[in-house]
Structures are given as structure tokens and as C-alpha cells.
Amino acid sequence: MATFFGEVVVAPSRAGLDEEEEAREETPEDREIRREIEKKREVDVLWTWRSGGCAEEPLVCSRFIVAIGRNAAAFLSSFILDSVCWEVVGVVKLWNEWCRTSSTTNVLPTDSFCLFYRLISDPTVLLCQCSCYVAEDQQFQWLEKVFGSMQKKGLQVTILSTCPVADYKTQESTLTLVSPFLRALKTKEFQEQVCCPLLEQPNIVRDLPAAVLSYCQVWQIPAVLYQCYTDVIKLDTVTIEAFKPLLSSKVLKSLAKDSSESTKILKKFLTTSDTHNNIYI
Image 1 (cartoon, one colour):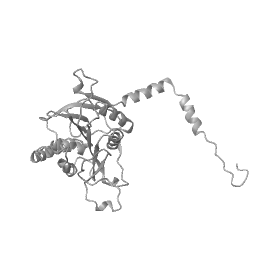
Image 2 (cartoon, helix red, strand yellow):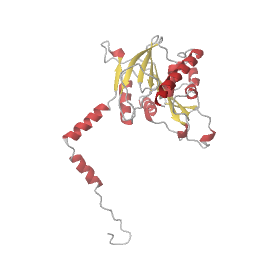
Image 3 (cartoon, one colour):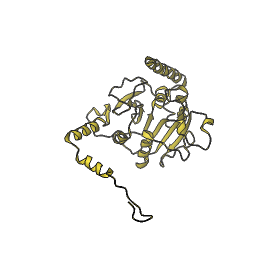
């Protein structure tokens, strides 16, 4: 109760005390449950190229291409990846509230997975398809275990991802925007020309694409993020093909497959996905 006009009265609260009491009252069973949950949320990166006995030797990598999200991963499957030219060299195994991956490399378009491929003709070129959700508390583990396996000297990173067009901030009405469209964000060390306009302020990126780009900025690795803004959440032909301008970039130009063959693979890829989704209709 105030004793004079204008006196600041602090209301009694047990919020801090309750937190302290809860911390003191943690039982051995509570600690064991917490440890089990933390262990379950650990990110495991399994490399096949490390099975030959050189477990601690880092991978020499000149180009690392990371596709995050189903549409970005489908773009690489359709226009870059080829079973004759590429080999699977790693897989990420993780669990969280939104996805559960395994160590298998036989995946469907609707599966949650994170696979690493290496170009057979040039083993320094590494590619990652990550269609699974990596939670905030797992992103640091992902970065440390993936990039910790590579030599950072001479490395260049290209990131592909998608984002809802509703998240794009502009002075114009988003209803007038022709989506999908690309925007780029790069680190200070990336000196090459980008294939689309740079992302305007005050737009930001988030989740794993932002974590990868931030990691590269801290470690002074040349990196560029190409983010596709789209109004379609599921696998979509138009969204996948929105990444096609990147095929003229210095990094992807030499890796691109024949365009006619890529179109056939893209149609087959989406047909397989639609057939699998119809099971749940």
C-alpha cells in the first residue's frame, strides 16, 4: 500500500522463488528424463567416406551446395543430381517434434531426409539435400558436425531455400507480386555476381538457411543464399523451376544436366510425390 502520492509500489511476486524452488526440487528421475530427451535430440552425421580408417581427416571441399526444403531439394534432383555422376557419401539422422529421419538413403519425395552427395569426377564438390526440419536447438549441432568435417580453406557455399511470399516485406502490396521469385543474400567474402536481386531491407532470413549463412560469415567463408519466395507450400513445378536462373551461375553451370532430360525427371518426380500423397486422401 502506498504511503504518499506517486510512490512506486512493487507488488509481491513468487515468480523467481518458484523457479528457484523448482530447480532445487529436481529429482534424479527428472534429471534422467532431461538427459534422455537431450540425447534423443542429438544430431548424428554419418559419413561413408570415413569408413576407410581416416576418421579424423577433414574432407577437402571446394564447392558445397545446400538445398533446404522439399522444393529446393527437388530442384537439385531434377537439374543437377545423376546417379551416374554422383554418389551418396553421408546422411544426417535426427529427431524432433516435426520430423524423424533415419540412416537410410532410399527415400521418397515425401520423406524427411538429409543426404550428402559427392561428384565422382571431382570429389571436392559436395551437395546436400535437406528436406527435414532442423529445430533451433539442433542447428548448431548440424553446423558443427557438417562443417567440422570439411576443410574451410578454399571452400565456397551456395544455399537454396524457399519461404512463404507472405513473409516478404515490401512497401508495395504483396498481392501485386508475381511469385515465385528469387532474392539473394551473401557474405562479405562472396565476390561473384549473383543471379537475382539482393534481398532488400528490412527482410530477414531464418531457420537453417540463416544459420548456415551466419556460420559462413563468422568463419569468413564465401557464401550466397538464394531464397525463393512462393505462395505454394507443397512440391510445385513452378516453384522448383523458379531456381532455374541459378543454372547459369559459375557454381552450377558445369553441373547442370540436359534440360530436356531434367524436365522429364521433374515430371516423374512430382508424379511419384502425388501418387504417394493420394494414399492419405
